[in-house]
Length: 296
Image 1 (cartoon, rainbow, N blue to C red):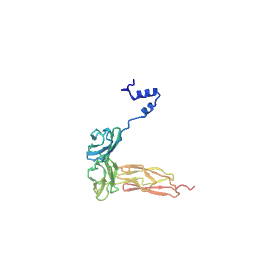
Image 2 (cartoon, helix red, strand yellow):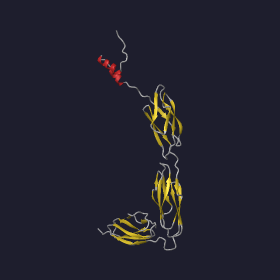
Image 3 (spheres, rainbow, N blue to C red):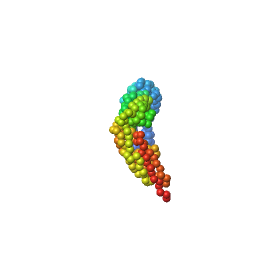
Image 4 (cartoon, helix red, strand yellow):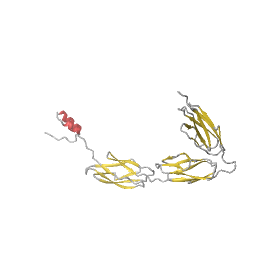
């Protein structure tokens, strides 16, 4: 008498079918449970944090569960069946760049994006008073991570020597050359903010910064090479150094203070004609002459 088989596994049934010479084995082994197809439509989350709704679409008999590993994002409800309206809750974004999180719904992954926080900047001090000798001073910039900023000076005697740009808070170093003339002023723009700089006039007595160079000129062979000269001035007197020709490279820091040595390199002269250039060191000029190359 035939009796139904109760509680047999698919594997056991397949084996039995195979033993009987049937074709049931192939049909059972290739069958699989089709995963529910899910779509999620979620708006961009505001930077200040809020609860927004996201629409989950799927078939009516599909059961699902939702989760995320992002600590700043919550999902409600965490599970359900069929179509649903999810509530996504986000905390305030503390950075000036957008952030994203992955939402996993029954093995299917979706990306949720939160807007960047509005950038805001603060500088201290907002004004700098400097004596005629010049020197260096720090400007402290406070902002959110991800907020991009740059600096710009309105005068060549006022230079940013470190932290000229970035995307986070920074300590910006500013160099101010010595002043041998009348009182003067300039500005350093940091992001959207202006730092006003005022410098005293040069002293009328011999306490003012004075400069001398040793030697005042050098002759360089056609093959080029390196050379140097000394700059003599009072301690604390700030000055800058620069060449007026691209074939001379300054090897010394461009923002020295007090006595220092200026080192530079000269490229080979490709012409048979001698050439010359000057290197400015504070208010003084060092003259460089270079021989012409020999005729081939």
